[in-house]
Image (cartoon, rainbow, N blue to C red; front, side, top):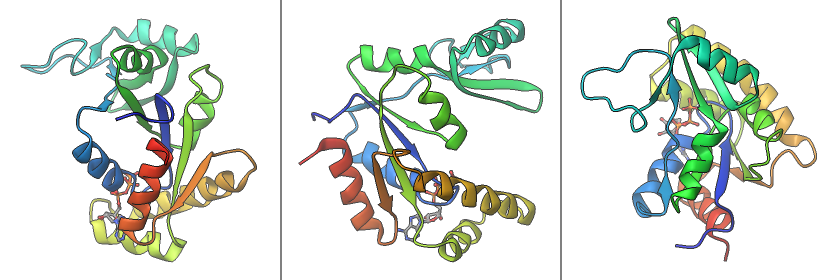
Length: 189
Ligand SMILES: Nc1ncnc2c1ncn2[C@@H]1O[C@H](COP(=O)(O)OP(=O)(O)OP(=O)(O)O)[C@@H](O)[C@H]1O
């Protein structure tokens, strides 16, 4: 299936519905999309393959590459670094697949500094009240994390209002309608 671009960025507040929409998209078009392989400084677990599950790298190498601007995003969880490199995205498109990056606002700003030239899509909740209901309804975060996510989401919504921040804004009120809008943004008419 032809898409209007080879790389898409999907962003939006936590709980706005990105994973829900992407799960459906990848389910309907399983051979169109490919996943970028992340880097990590943690060791491989039994059965994990280097270059497939992760690029397993030494901490000093990853720190140097992050500093050299080779990563779109990186973060440290329990002492291990994780991240998505620009090359990992290129590898997907060079394999003939379409890459969708599900990233936060910082990741979006970082992609804008690269020459990846994706189409930027923002998934917007109908309101902050509905977002809060959905986050609580999902039941995956503790109270402190919910408060943190809601506060971050205000900044994400403000950024999305800025001129030219995103090519398309999809309001995820009715899931079916939002999904149709996403398909339109990705495949065109
Ligand atoms: N249109 C919708 N109507 C009602 N509920 C929805 C809708 N879209 C998503 N949800 C629900 O809202 C919750 C949050 O959705 P989801 O987990 O997809 O968000 P997300 O943007 O991927 O969040 P995160 O960034 O934290 O991973 C889920 O429980 C999901 O089932």
